[in-house]
Image (cartoon, rainbow, N blue to C red; front, side, top):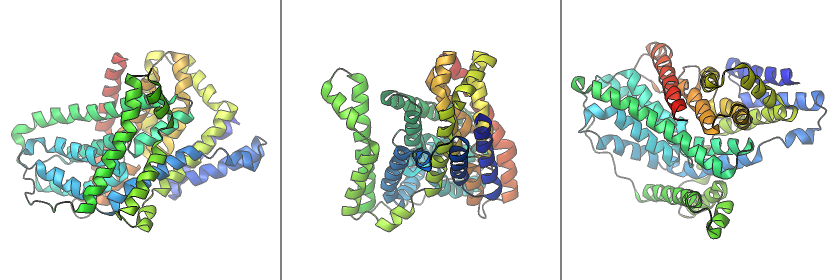
Length: 429
């Protein structure tokens, strides 16, 4: 059964890549075949493996964040942030990064930010002498970092996957912040060094036309995002700082981002900040199906001890100091052809708690290795990030040339930077 499940995971990824059909659908079928006919489970028992909590939280959070997407608030905010940096041309890579981080952190998520900003950034790099590799990395880094914030799409998914793997709620908050901190600080250092080295060569002219101001409904959408983020963040942080206060413990045990998001969905609908049918249509159903389908298959693996066997093999056959780098490499290789959120994280997160106990490594280090590894190759033209960038190229840059840039320049550089970051982080832990 262990071999069958491992083969099913690999086959699902391969079939999804070849056929362009959602990987989650293949994973669901394999879960049924292996669970019912290989493990003797009933169909009802297999259906119970569907990660209902993860599905609900992603559905609720993305539904709320779709209001500022539908009414154009986040896209207009992005234009304003870029405009603010028109007097600092040498710092354009950092400006792109911070803009993408803010917009993604406010709920737009990785895919939306990349699809929205990539055409603008590619056009900007063509009109200036901004290196196209650094332009692509800047927006990709920013979209990833912002989405990894614990109230944004990727951060929410990471925390729910950690909970499913058996990590305590307070620890998921700490680990989620740690992942965001690493994926935010690493690009800041890299882009700052590049901006400093390239300052003398910078002759960038940023468009100086003032974008249209946000209308009242767009301002209300942004305000609601900040209010929700405050509610979701203040209580857990207060509980970490004052764990002995019972009132805070009571609230912390009952604060759930999914239910809070639904509350703000109703507020948004009452304020008429967006059309209900439009915001429902914007829910990333493909991502939801992929994450939940793969999670079902992984849950079968947990049932028969696949995770335990993989953990035991790693902890006994690989030197402990090499485990973080190996985890990084495995994640990076998987992410070249598959989604971080839909495949890599659901597949590798469940083995972290056991591997941390067996090796003595900090769980946060292992979670960071998985995320940084997967996201270092997300710019691959065969993965979601690279394919979105290629799709956004339009007439700004030749697609064949852009594919070569992504595959032979941006991807190797990103992986090298990621390995360097992991080696430094490993020294800290």
